[in-house]
Image (tube, rainbow, N blue to C red; front, side, top):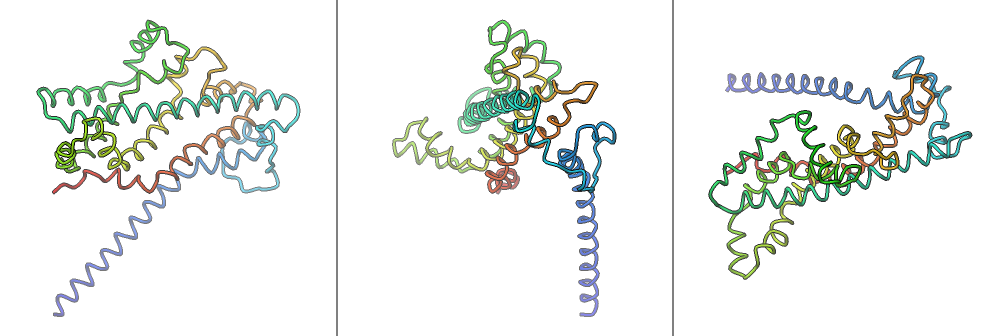
Length: 296
């Protein structure tokens, strides 16, 4: 009995030590992750010339903090603030519309592709899925020129369709949906068919509600990717009135740093949509990410 007690105390001490090290490690990681965000937030309340002189730094001197940058952002400042504010919110609206369309269409297309590759057994099923996954191994920089020629040939350059269509069938999203669906009971399909439900009804009315966690998880990731995407929209869009927020903010960068006030405040304000999407779908996020990890 004494030996068992000593072993249990030793195991408990080891567990506490590992827990402390894990907590310390994650605390350090959280600091490095939160540092740029906190530095940017503090810089958004300071004059742009101070950012040019000192760079991004965590400075807790509240005497130099003002709301002038955000007043300028909302067109409440002097000079050209209303013009710059109009441009900013035009880019903001373009990003919102593009992100919503991309997320909705990508989730629908990838869901039905994954549904067909999972719920139906047919010849070349494994080969087709392999071809889908193989596209994940090709860097976007290699596909960039062929895709540009494609959208030019289809006459959808400088349109939202030119930005959305090339990435509509995302291999990573298809893979995630398929992994999630493999953990669902196939008996649901047989029961629905016996009850006279159509194949379309089974996929939309029965299977789609069950995959809500997968939809929520992929909605967050797709929204982040679309909202932060700058390279491909910059190649497709030619009209400044169609620029997204990331492209528009990039045009504010000048060697003289005369637009850093709007740039920093606008960057911080641009975090809100992604943060809102995460808060809305966070209750489904863990379920969606862990689904399919354990079988049996």
